[in-house]
Image (cartoon, rainbow, N blue to C red; front, side, top):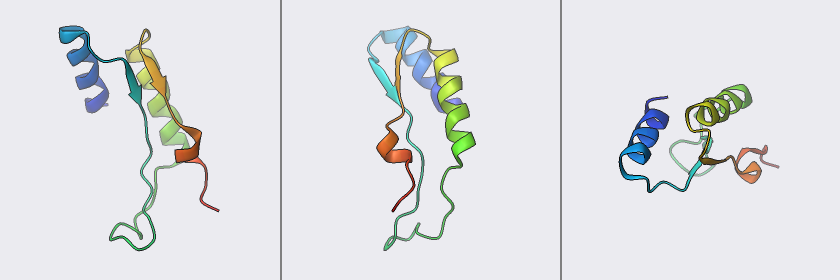
Length: 71
């Protein structure tokens, strides 16, 4: 939430933000974060919804290839 508010404030001040990409966290095999739990789908959906409410005229993206389960 703090990050979304900061992005909105910067855009209101400077008018230079064209889009916001909401990306989940997912640990990757072979890296030190591999054992960490990824972002839950519900949390991701809520974050996108809040971003759209806070920045209704901004392009909000949530790339599905970054959220889909690993095969």
